[in-house]
Amino acid sequence: MDKRILQSLKRLPGVQVIDEAPQLRAYESDGLSAIKARPSVVVLPGDLPSLQSVLAVARAFSVPVVARGAGTGLSGGATPHPDGILVSLAKFRRILSIDVENRRARVQPGVTNLAISEAVAEYKLFYAPDPSSQIACTIGGNVAENSGGVHCVKYGLTLHNVTGVEVLLMSGETLRLGYDDPFTHQPDVLALLHGSEGMLGIVTEVEVQLLPTPEAVVVMMSAFDSVSRAANAVGAIFAQGIIPAGLEMMDRLAIQAAEDFVNAGYPRHAEAMLLIELDGTAREVDELIEQMRRVLAQQGASGTKVERSPEGRARLWLGRKAAFPAVGRIAPDYYCMDGTIPRRHLAEVLERISVRSEHYGLQVANVFHAGDGNLHPLILYDANVPGQLDKAEAFGADILNLCIEFGGTITGEHGVGLEKINQMCVQFDESELRLFHGIKAAFDPSNLLNPGKAVPTLSRCAEFGAMHVHAGQLPHANLDRY
Image (tube, rainbow, N blue to C red):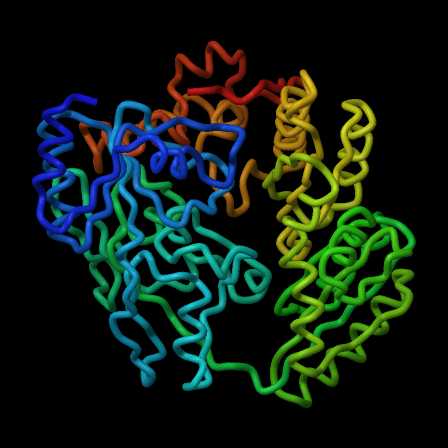
């Protein structure tokens, strides 16, 4: 990087600058470690004015800027630009206010997801979205990726639980959207910022909605002798008009890995299992349990267990939330996919994934948000074996194409980043991509915020050989490297 840029950054008050190679290594990737790029410099501003100063330097030298939260993202959205400035928001970690009467909290973007619920627990409130990484992931990153979680089937994604956002534009201006201002929702720019992956602006404050802690909560665990029966049971539950607070599915490989890791009491013999959380009044939950038992029995479930105690519920959820690291113990590497399909196609799509698993010679552990149809196949591979990473990437692309073929989408909550940028060419046509680029230009005309992510250029799609093609013509391609 130009020495003038480094000198300018180091002169800024309230800004910590990291430019030594050993320290920079920690910022080479987000949770998608298959894609790495060493940043030229990392800065940690301490407040909004110092962050605005950093952007002023970037504008003066036309240097790209990538904002980073906790780095738990899984699509390469926070991968550094090799010639740019990586801005860490780790110092923006204050809970600014808690409004118990109106059930809202204002927080800085570096506050962890779990910390919000912990801070409001004494008021018998909680923040509903709960990604598996909630102990580490930050609320600013949740907004950037529109993160989901176990409870999103009933309570919605991050988008549905945020009532206001302050965002810093590349120009240095700040926008405050929401916060009970009716004029900010025409059009709904607040919604537009969710899932924008740091391409439109940098989130500097978030107002979240809080919900009352339910009177009663139970978690049910049901085992099945086939993946298809478990998948069909998901549709049967919703067909009865039941909306669980959470509905997760795990197959045999994921069950055994999680059980070996945390001893959650999972049925190791099962081919698949469902974890179902029900909440509401005590009477309502008791009625739902009986309804659920009937539905599950009709779908061939065995050994259904009901946990009412906080300790028992936590133990069952621990296995699910530890599933990703648990799978990491049975393979040197794994590639976590994220796509969404209509629930009615779960059984068929999982069967197609199994067939592709045999084709590529790579095992897959399935653990996902079944209630949302949000798939998270974990493709197991060994990066030290020549060709296996390429196979895993091609397999992952096939899965995303499969999601499109069945009327779904290439991402449910992890975002596009660098990982899925080629599949954007498959899902969207030329006019739609031009619209996306137009939105980007309206917010960031200099194209300095997280450039090259999420939305492919039309020339890239032409080189990839796909532009909104039809089922049966879906290609796959390896991830691009920086």
